[in-house]
Length: 499
Ligand code: NAD
Image 1 (cartoon, rainbow, N blue to C red):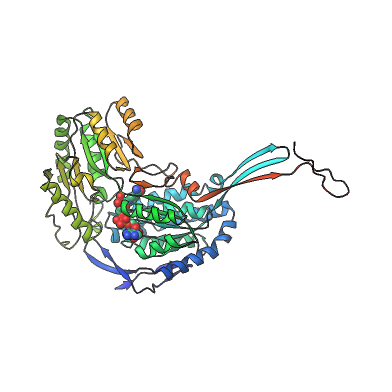
Image 2 (spheres, protein in one colour):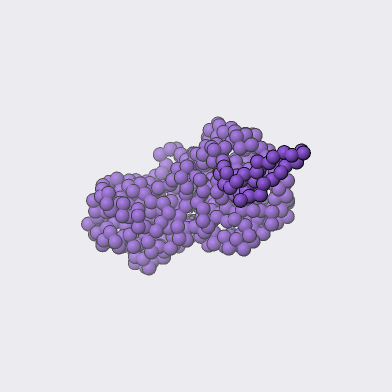
């Protein structure tokens, strides 16, 4: 079995820590290669290289930095098939989903091409007699990002593209479950013209993360992953004086009003609940039909659709709806939570237990599950399952449905399906969740808006991508300059004192 590398100073570099993790192909349950887990010394060495390279990159004008992003976009299109195949092989998602993963990252890179405009400062002419005041956005220096397994192309690009186009160096610590695509992206950035040392990939686990959190040179940390780790990274990073933004877990509710188009709502729920095996932070994991009649109609529409879902490996073609979950541990955790649902009295309407795929018995496939009569106190309601499990919580009124989304500790995304504009408007205005869909089940904002949840789904002030990314990766410097109209007398300025 071969070993993957780190990507440091423009080259693939073997790990020296002697610690490795297996990178699995989840469709067959076999290790493909090992990824090195960096030591503190390896992380610190990469940070030194970044710090040495960054000032020259910051001095490159924004237009030229943007041209690197332009070239990178072309290379992403050129290598789309190769990237998607590598991504599916390690993650398990279908090829169309893997291409979507690259595409949603690419769109943020496209946004970053606007850097010359987005980095323009402000100027006040004649703020006082002979006084001008201007502010500029300067890069932070060495920045770092820690990313999750579920979007190994998109989320690294959401971080490194704005960081780099703003003039920073960036160290990426991707998920150890699917590190190949991040390594490929770093190579492509250099092919696009990025100088060595500006984007480096250091693979690893907690040891590498802690080294980044504790390194004094690192100015900012971006994190996307589960809430407990987000909370830990935010606390340790902030107490070390860094700028930190952390995006955590989710439990997204979809409210279905009695007047909704039930077939449309069911189609939306099946895509949003089971797509990518439910391993999306914007997946819908809770359906909230309002009224028992709505619930019965919804379940009736859902069941045949769920039973028709085709679960399989990414190699089986484009009609596969979703693939395996990422690891044996993830599969075991989903199965454990499903059992708690049964034990705690929820009704398992579609039972995906004991799902098996001929020829792929060792793969981490999980059949689709649909629960009805789920209540607020059940573990399957409180916990992020991150698998193909949809829970139905019956609400008796709109206010009760709204209250469910409001009271849940997570606040990433939510949706309402209704034909009534007044209800939809009220929901969007009152719900304490970051991203809202009205008859849209997965309301992921486009690159030029910002992405982020509320409550325990986020730690920090600024969102990902859009204008917030340019704020996160720069700091403002404001200059007050005084050039009073001097009268040259005898070759010297004769400054008039200010009034
Ligand atoms: P994870 O928290 O297990 O891992 C994320 C990153 O943290 C990885 O790089 C991992 O190596 C590192 N890490 C893991 N344990 C650590 C520790 N003890 N100390 C320091 N670093 C550690 O998350 P995951 O399983 O890779 O991803 C799934 C999670 O990410 C879900 O909770 C999902 O909702 C969330 N997610 C959130 C968003 C969002 O924008 N809010 C987007 C995608 C995924």
